Structures are given as C-alpha cells and as structure tokens.
Length: 199
Image 1 (cartoon, rainbow, N blue to C red):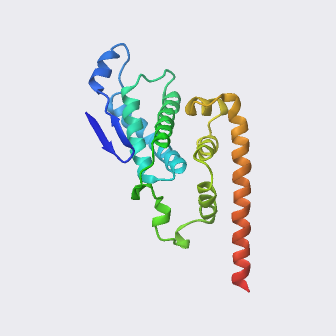
Image 2: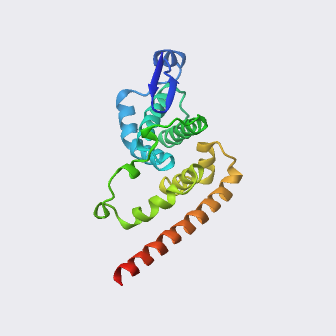
C-alpha cells in the first residue's frame, strides 16, 4: 500500500508487524506518544519549516517523521534521545526530498511569497531574518536552526544530520559568518530606506 502526498510516495510501514517483531521492546502507548508529540511537535515543525522554506512540505514531512518514529526501534535513554532520533528521521526525509527531481507545484512556492506583506503583523527581527535565511542554502539553515533554535551540540547535530562531527564546527562557523553578512546587508538596506523616507 502506498501513501500519496506532496513530498512524493512513501511506503507505509506495517505498524502491527513492527510491534510484533519487537516483542522484547515495550511499545509507546497512546498517552505516552500524545505527551511526546505535544512536547516535540512545535520544535520539529519549526525546524522543518525553517529549513525547507515550505510550510506544506514541513507538515507532510513531520507527519511522515512521526509515523516512522512509531514504527522504528527507538533508542534507549528516554525522551532526549527520542527527540534527537525524531530530528534525525526528519533530516533524512528532507535529504530524500532534496534529492528527488523537482516538479513545478504551487505548494513549492513559499507561503511568504503568496501572503500579503503586513508590516504591522511582523516584528522587525523576523522581517530582517526571513529574507536572510531564504538566501542561505538548506544545509546552512538546518545547521543554524539545530544549533541556535534547538540548542544541540556539535556532536548531536552530527548524529541528526549524518555529517562528520569534526566538520560541524567549520560548517557552523561558515553559516554564522554568512548569516551575519546577510543580516548586515538587510539592516543597512533598511536604514537607507528609512533615511530616504525621512527626506
């Protein structure tokens, strides 16, 4: 059986077969999963939206991430490791999505381009940060989000992304330097525009 969504086609794992094959492992009951979902979903969705730049894609990947999380053998160590494992699943799904040939689709257009720009509804930092983040590569956005929004260490980021732990520090350094340059450009452009309006 196949599932059709905007991220492509994925095989839906047989949950009952996976649970039966893990008889020695206690499955997560519905209450435990509901609590885990409530605590982890907002951060996971924010990560996927920021890295992919597409809310509809993020929703699809988030749903697929939780499905795969439920069907997989979870790591030991409790919720902290569950959360890291979940982010790793989401990262792999993003990577698979980026490898797939792109088809022209309205859902691939970032919502920010379709929505009306209302200066009153956005704070200045978001107005400046969003265009700068949009000009960065997905990998750079991913590393910055995991390090700064989620607070993961270099080692944890390496586990989530599958990158070499030694290379994370250099990649993050370059991403930070790039976002700083882009933010300076955005701020300078905004200041020039404000000065022109005053004249």
